Image 1 (tube, protein in one colour):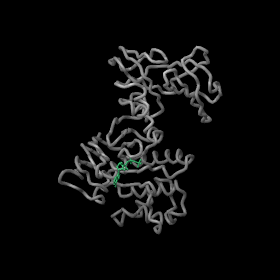
Image 2: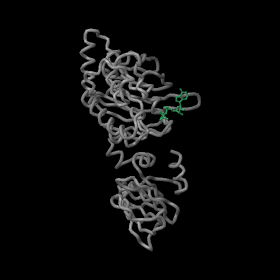
Image 3: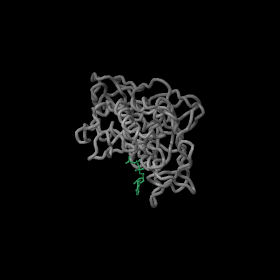
Image 4: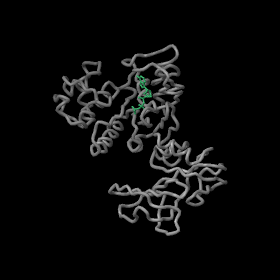
Length: 354
Ligand code: ATP
């Protein structure tokens, strides 16, 4: 498959802050790639470097076979064949929907047909004469996507595309945007700090932290086989428990757990997904229920273990436990172990800071 974007050793500093740190990343033709990470990890700066709104301090960017940023080369944003959907959509308020969408289409003769085609694509057929303020947030976003796609860019970039929408609308619009990008066979990169958004929308996810890309994989692989303990806890819920690995099992406070990485020995941390953890009322159990977070369709029950560690269990909505209950903890399936040199006390601040 063709590569549309190649980032090599891409680096950007703002004064003493290294916002993007030697990032290597490929985006393949027709895929939707999410840049996922906590606030300040460099996602937006990476996007802005690709768009040409920032100049890298080192490294290079190749876009659709052409070097657009490198040691002695910098192609201006308007010459990059990149469409951008900004967080606030940035529609021209005084222009109609049709004029907004047609804005970047150079060929005057083709413009009207292209606008009509794009409005069809985003489900706004017949809305060309309206003004942006007459549209809902979700509709404005679709206009912004239509405007970005209209000039047939090689790549479309979306910066936190759903952050302006309320929670109920966000899930629906997410599905619509996914369908629009698929129908347009667009290659897209979007930035988000929301793991659910990345997991449900992207073909592949690049997880960033402190300017670096830690892992790039399909959502299922990222969730099931995180290669880094930060990825394990940032993508999906997970609790880290200290343990000692020997061969294909790890001894922990909740028993001996089989692990997928049989080559580890010594001190490790294992990542436990709450959906793999089950609890049973047991006067001689290893833990005590500390709290329950109820979500309607399910609940998370938090259990404190004797050594101070925490595990959570995700279960159906029926209330089966109360804070203070003593419970035994069982884990199904294999767990992933990460090599650590520290103790749990050194593990937890790491999580709390994200
Ligand atoms: P968020 O999700 O909060 O938008 P992000 O992952 O997109 O975060 P960036 O906006 O790329 O992160 O910022 C990365 C780092 O670079 C941060 O420490 C930020 O403060 C810094 N930074 C970004 N833009 C600038 C700028 N124009 N001037 C100075 N520092 C900047």
